[in-house]
Image 1 (cartoon, rainbow, N blue to C red):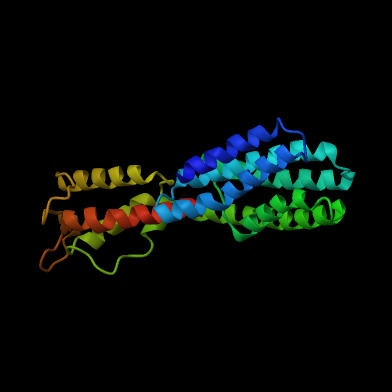
Image 2: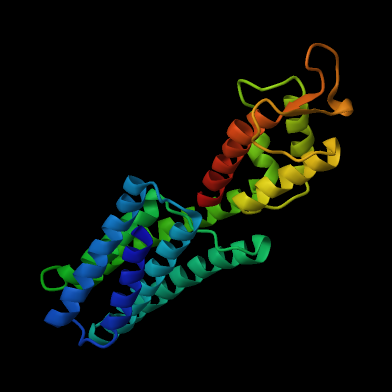
Length: 266
Protein backbone atom coordinates (compact mmCIF):
# COMPACT_ATOMS: atom_id res chain seq x y z
CA UNK A 1 0.00 0.00 0.00
CA UNK A 2 2.70 2.52 1.03
CA UNK A 3 4.83 1.78 -2.04
CA UNK A 4 1.74 2.16 -4.23
CA UNK A 5 1.13 5.62 -2.75
CA UNK A 6 4.75 6.54 -3.44
CA UNK A 7 4.38 5.24 -6.99
CA UNK A 8 1.31 7.41 -7.47
CA UNK A 9 3.43 10.43 -6.49
CA UNK A 10 5.84 9.65 -9.33
CA UNK A 11 2.92 9.37 -11.78
CA UNK A 12 1.43 12.65 -10.55
CA UNK A 13 4.82 14.34 -10.84
CA UNK A 14 5.13 13.27 -14.46
CA UNK A 15 1.56 14.45 -15.10
CA UNK A 16 2.58 17.91 -13.86
CA UNK A 17 4.82 18.22 -16.90
CA UNK A 18 1.71 18.44 -19.07
CA UNK A 19 -0.08 21.10 -17.02
CA UNK A 20 0.43 24.87 -17.44
CA UNK A 21 2.51 26.12 -14.51
CA UNK A 22 0.51 27.67 -11.65
CA UNK A 23 -2.81 26.72 -13.29
CA UNK A 24 -5.66 25.20 -11.24
CA UNK A 25 -4.85 21.76 -12.70
CA UNK A 26 -1.18 22.22 -11.77
CA UNK A 27 -2.04 23.13 -8.18
CA UNK A 28 -4.52 20.22 -7.88
CA UNK A 29 -1.92 17.65 -8.97
CA UNK A 30 0.79 19.41 -6.98
CA UNK A 31 -1.14 19.35 -3.70
CA UNK A 32 -2.23 15.73 -4.23
CA UNK A 33 1.37 14.65 -4.87
CA UNK A 34 2.53 16.52 -1.78
CA UNK A 35 -0.19 14.92 0.33
CA UNK A 36 0.93 11.47 -0.84
CA UNK A 37 4.44 12.30 0.37
CA UNK A 38 3.04 13.09 3.81
CA UNK A 39 1.16 9.82 4.25
CA UNK A 40 3.21 7.06 2.56
CA UNK A 41 5.71 6.80 5.42
CA UNK A 42 2.96 6.82 8.04
CA UNK A 43 1.07 4.10 6.16
CA UNK A 44 4.22 1.95 5.93
CA UNK A 45 4.85 2.25 9.68
CA UNK A 46 1.18 1.63 10.54
CA UNK A 47 1.00 -1.50 8.38
CA UNK A 48 4.46 -2.77 9.34
CA UNK A 49 5.69 -2.66 5.73
CA UNK A 50 8.71 -0.39 6.19
CA UNK A 51 11.46 -1.64 3.88
CA UNK A 52 14.75 -0.60 2.30
CA UNK A 53 13.06 -0.68 -1.12
CA UNK A 54 10.29 1.62 0.12
CA UNK A 55 12.82 4.10 1.51
CA UNK A 56 14.69 4.17 -1.80
CA UNK A 57 11.47 4.51 -3.81
CA UNK A 58 10.43 7.42 -1.59
CA UNK A 59 13.74 9.17 -2.22
CA UNK A 60 13.42 8.62 -5.98
CA UNK A 61 9.86 9.98 -5.89
CA UNK A 62 11.06 13.07 -4.00
CA UNK A 63 13.78 13.69 -6.59
CA UNK A 64 11.35 13.30 -9.51
CA UNK A 65 8.80 15.59 -7.85
CA UNK A 66 11.40 18.28 -7.10
CA UNK A 67 12.93 18.07 -10.59
CA UNK A 68 9.54 18.40 -12.30
CA UNK A 69 8.64 21.40 -10.15
CA UNK A 70 11.90 23.13 -11.06
CA UNK A 71 11.35 22.40 -14.75
CA UNK A 72 7.84 23.88 -14.63
CA UNK A 73 8.38 26.83 -12.28
CA UNK A 74 11.78 28.27 -13.16
CA UNK A 75 10.82 29.35 -16.72
CA UNK A 76 7.74 31.27 -15.53
CA UNK A 77 9.32 33.00 -12.55
CA UNK A 78 11.60 36.02 -12.47
CA UNK A 79 14.55 34.15 -11.01
CA UNK A 80 17.81 36.07 -10.53
CA UNK A 81 21.10 34.56 -11.74
CA UNK A 82 22.44 34.14 -8.21
CA UNK A 83 19.47 31.94 -7.37
CA UNK A 84 20.07 29.72 -10.41
CA UNK A 85 23.69 29.32 -9.33
CA UNK A 86 22.68 28.51 -5.75
CA UNK A 87 20.21 25.86 -6.93
CA UNK A 88 22.92 24.38 -9.17
CA UNK A 89 25.35 24.15 -6.24
CA UNK A 90 22.75 22.38 -4.09
CA UNK A 91 21.99 19.96 -6.94
CA UNK A 92 25.71 19.19 -7.35
CA UNK A 93 26.05 18.57 -3.60
CA UNK A 94 23.10 16.17 -3.65
CA UNK A 95 24.49 14.42 -6.74
CA UNK A 96 27.89 14.05 -5.05
CA UNK A 97 26.24 12.42 -2.02
CA UNK A 98 24.40 9.95 -4.26
CA UNK A 99 27.54 9.23 -6.28
CA UNK A 100 29.54 8.54 -3.12
CA UNK A 101 27.18 5.72 -2.15
CA UNK A 102 27.01 4.31 -5.67
CA UNK A 103 30.79 4.32 -6.10
CA UNK A 104 31.80 3.13 -2.63
CA UNK A 105 29.00 0.69 -1.86
CA UNK A 106 27.38 0.23 -5.29
CA UNK A 107 24.03 1.19 -3.76
CA UNK A 108 21.69 4.16 -3.46
CA UNK A 109 22.03 5.55 0.10
CA UNK A 110 18.95 7.49 1.16
CA UNK A 111 19.16 9.82 4.18
CA UNK A 112 15.78 10.55 5.79
CA UNK A 113 16.99 13.28 8.14
CA UNK A 114 14.97 16.00 9.87
CA UNK A 115 16.82 18.60 7.78
CA UNK A 116 15.79 16.90 4.54
CA UNK A 117 12.18 16.66 5.72
CA UNK A 118 12.15 20.38 6.62
CA UNK A 119 13.60 21.20 3.20
CA UNK A 120 10.95 19.07 1.53
CA UNK A 121 8.21 20.83 3.50
CA UNK A 122 9.50 24.27 2.56
CA UNK A 123 9.84 23.31 -1.09
CA UNK A 124 6.26 22.08 -1.07
CA UNK A 125 4.92 25.30 0.47
CA UNK A 126 7.07 27.56 -1.75
CA UNK A 127 4.82 27.64 -4.89
CA UNK A 128 1.78 28.24 -2.71
CA UNK A 129 3.32 31.46 -1.31
CA UNK A 130 4.29 33.12 -4.61
CA UNK A 131 1.27 35.43 -4.58
CA UNK A 132 2.03 37.06 -1.20
CA UNK A 133 5.75 36.56 -0.37
CA UNK A 134 8.59 38.05 -2.41
CA UNK A 135 10.20 35.28 -4.45
CA UNK A 136 13.76 36.31 -3.61
CA UNK A 137 13.08 36.21 0.12
CA UNK A 138 11.25 32.88 0.18
CA UNK A 139 13.69 31.26 -2.27
CA UNK A 140 16.69 32.41 -0.23
CA UNK A 141 15.22 30.86 2.93
CA UNK A 142 14.51 27.57 1.14
CA UNK A 143 17.98 27.47 -0.44
CA UNK A 144 19.65 28.23 2.86
CA UNK A 145 17.88 25.33 4.59
CA UNK A 146 18.46 23.07 1.56
CA UNK A 147 22.19 23.85 1.60
CA UNK A 148 22.43 22.99 5.30
CA UNK A 149 20.49 19.77 4.64
CA UNK A 150 22.80 18.80 1.76
CA UNK A 151 25.89 19.41 3.91
CA UNK A 152 24.41 17.37 6.76
CA UNK A 153 23.46 14.62 4.30
CA UNK A 154 27.02 14.55 2.99
CA UNK A 155 28.45 14.04 6.48
CA UNK A 156 25.84 11.35 7.18
CA UNK A 157 26.61 9.46 3.96
CA UNK A 158 30.33 9.54 4.68
CA UNK A 159 29.76 8.33 8.24
CA UNK A 160 27.63 5.47 6.91
CA UNK A 161 30.30 4.55 4.38
CA UNK A 162 32.91 4.46 7.15
CA UNK A 163 30.95 2.07 9.38
CA UNK A 164 28.89 0.25 6.81
CA UNK A 165 30.67 -3.06 7.02
CA UNK A 166 28.75 -6.20 7.83
CA UNK A 167 30.65 -6.58 11.10
CA UNK A 168 28.83 -3.50 12.48
CA UNK A 169 25.72 -5.58 13.21
CA UNK A 170 27.73 -7.89 15.49
CA UNK A 171 29.11 -5.11 17.72
CA UNK A 172 26.53 -5.39 20.51
CA UNK A 173 26.16 -8.92 21.83
CA UNK A 174 22.78 -10.33 22.95
CA UNK A 175 22.05 -10.62 26.67
CA UNK A 176 21.12 -14.31 26.46
CA UNK A 177 22.30 -17.28 24.43
CA UNK A 178 21.17 -20.81 23.71
CA UNK A 179 24.30 -22.90 24.39
CA UNK A 180 27.86 -22.08 25.45
CA UNK A 181 29.16 -22.23 21.90
CA UNK A 182 26.78 -19.57 20.59
CA UNK A 183 28.85 -16.52 21.65
CA UNK A 184 31.95 -18.11 20.09
CA UNK A 185 30.08 -18.68 16.83
CA UNK A 186 28.95 -15.04 17.05
CA UNK A 187 32.56 -13.86 17.43
CA UNK A 188 33.61 -16.13 14.57
CA UNK A 189 30.99 -14.59 12.28
CA UNK A 190 31.96 -11.07 13.35
CA UNK A 191 35.60 -11.70 12.49
CA UNK A 192 34.65 -13.11 9.09
CA UNK A 193 32.33 -10.15 8.48
CA UNK A 194 35.14 -7.62 9.01
CA UNK A 195 36.16 -8.02 5.37
CA UNK A 196 32.61 -8.12 4.00
CA UNK A 197 30.47 -5.29 2.65
CA UNK A 198 26.76 -4.99 3.39
CA UNK A 199 24.56 -7.72 1.95
CA UNK A 200 20.78 -8.15 1.87
CA UNK A 201 18.99 -9.70 4.89
CA UNK A 202 18.33 -12.92 2.97
CA UNK A 203 21.97 -13.11 1.87
CA UNK A 204 23.01 -12.61 5.50
CA UNK A 205 20.85 -15.55 6.63
CA UNK A 206 22.17 -17.79 3.86
CA UNK A 207 25.76 -16.84 4.72
CA UNK A 208 25.28 -17.71 8.41
CA UNK A 209 23.76 -21.06 7.46
CA UNK A 210 26.67 -21.77 5.10
CA UNK A 211 29.22 -20.99 7.83
CA UNK A 212 27.33 -23.22 10.27
CA UNK A 213 27.25 -26.07 7.75
CA UNK A 214 30.94 -25.63 7.00
CA UNK A 215 31.90 -25.77 10.68
CA UNK A 216 29.48 -28.43 11.94
CA UNK A 217 28.76 -30.56 8.89
CA UNK A 218 25.01 -30.26 9.45
CA UNK A 219 22.30 -27.88 8.34
CA UNK A 220 21.06 -25.02 10.50
CA UNK A 221 17.33 -25.62 10.84
CA UNK A 222 14.58 -24.53 13.22
CA UNK A 223 14.05 -28.05 14.54
CA UNK A 224 13.31 -27.89 18.28
CA UNK A 225 16.33 -28.52 20.56
CA UNK A 226 18.59 -29.44 17.64
CA UNK A 227 22.21 -28.34 18.03
CA UNK A 228 25.75 -29.01 16.84
CA UNK A 229 28.96 -29.38 18.82
CA UNK A 230 31.79 -27.46 17.16
CA UNK A 231 35.14 -28.41 18.66
CA UNK A 232 36.86 -25.08 18.07
CA UNK A 233 34.20 -23.43 20.24
CA UNK A 234 34.59 -25.95 23.11
CA UNK A 235 36.18 -24.23 26.11
CA UNK A 236 34.96 -26.41 28.96
CA UNK A 237 31.69 -26.70 30.89
CA UNK A 238 28.28 -28.17 30.18
CA UNK A 239 27.15 -27.72 26.55
CA UNK A 240 30.69 -26.57 25.73
CA UNK A 241 31.04 -26.01 22.00
CA UNK A 242 27.30 -26.46 21.52
CA UNK A 243 25.62 -24.13 19.03
CA UNK A 244 21.85 -23.99 19.35
CA UNK A 245 19.86 -24.21 16.12
CA UNK A 246 16.76 -22.98 17.90
CA UNK A 247 18.46 -19.87 19.31
CA UNK A 248 20.02 -18.89 16.01
CA UNK A 249 16.86 -19.43 13.98
CA UNK A 250 14.47 -17.77 16.46
CA UNK A 251 16.66 -15.06 18.01
CA UNK A 252 20.16 -14.71 16.58
CA UNK A 253 19.42 -14.46 12.86
CA UNK A 254 16.23 -12.32 13.26
CA UNK A 255 18.18 -9.94 15.52
CA UNK A 256 21.01 -9.58 13.01
CA UNK A 257 18.60 -9.11 10.10
CA UNK A 258 16.76 -6.40 12.06
CA UNK A 259 20.04 -4.59 12.77
CA UNK A 260 21.02 -4.90 9.11
CA UNK A 261 17.73 -3.33 7.99
CA UNK A 262 18.24 -0.40 10.38
CA UNK A 263 21.83 0.07 9.21
CA UNK A 264 20.74 0.16 5.57
CA UNK A 265 17.99 2.70 6.30
CA UNK A 266 20.23 5.28 8.03
